[in-house]
Length: 290
Ligand SMILES: NC(=O)c1ccc[n+]([C@@H]2O[C@H](COP(=O)([O-])OP(=O)(O)OC[C@H]3O[C@@H](n4cnc5c(N)ncnc54)[C@H](OP(=O)(O)O)[C@@H]3O)[C@@H](O)[C@H]2O)c1
Image (cartoon, rainbow, N blue to C red; front, side, top):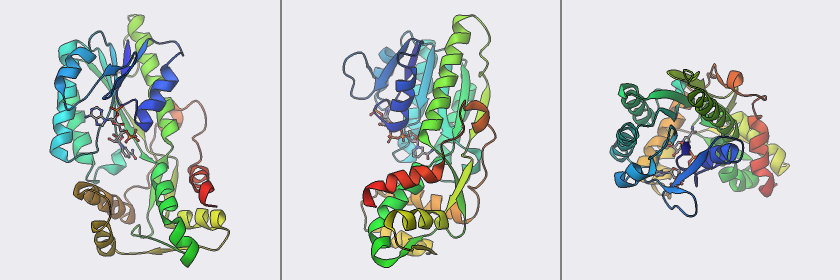
């Protein structure tokens, strides 16, 4: 049996949908379980003891929205519970190697190290940054851009190699179902011990977001880089929690520093179709404002 965690989240939901009804025996894991779903709350390890019973392949979707001490504790609990339950293979959704200097990398690399010490087999999916991130920047900026003709962000002239969540879900479902098939046939898992680099094929910068805004708003919009200090000040008065401000500034600093532009080697190999074009995804996200 395959269990997918975090199915009410965007990535976990897409992965579960792809596996459900497509052949493998799969069950949904979520904090607020109803129906056939199992209650899986990484912050409550008792749910993991029951929830992982009978699971052979665990799709462990990272739960990164918290301070690092909380994320480390919850991810550590998953590793311990999977080992105790006799899970045979864990597939972990991590972060691309190009993101090594991001503040969110700490929890991912710590989790990878904990998984590597465990007795079960592991596949690490080092996911690229979602194309939904620049799409979110574009939609958040649309009103101001419509009024001023300017899109501002502290991205310098850097770019982010982004990937559509749906591409990552396609790959995750493929790896999970092939792993389950290998286990059922008594074969060595073809993805066991593998770390896949899944940063996107297209790198998006501030100019690209301005171009998408220009098309959506039907007026010229230009990109104007701003400083991290200005952005820190603006974020301090917004809705983000303090740790989210830190992660957001880290993302912008890494982008401006040119660290996030490198595509991953494994995306196109593992996808059965060409990657979904990131610019189209941004344009689609902007459709309601155009
Ligand atoms: N690559 C990127 O660009 C990027 C960007 C943002 C985040 N991420 C990471 O990728 C993960 C998945 O992304 P997403 O877009 O699907 O995020 P999302 O839509 O916010 O979903 C996150 C899901 O994580 C699950 N979760 C949260 N706390 C949990 C806990 N204590 N125990 C078990 N599950 C918990 C929840 O699922 P249930 O409600 O079903 O329990 C939640 O819906 C995120 O959690 C984050 O670690 C990656």
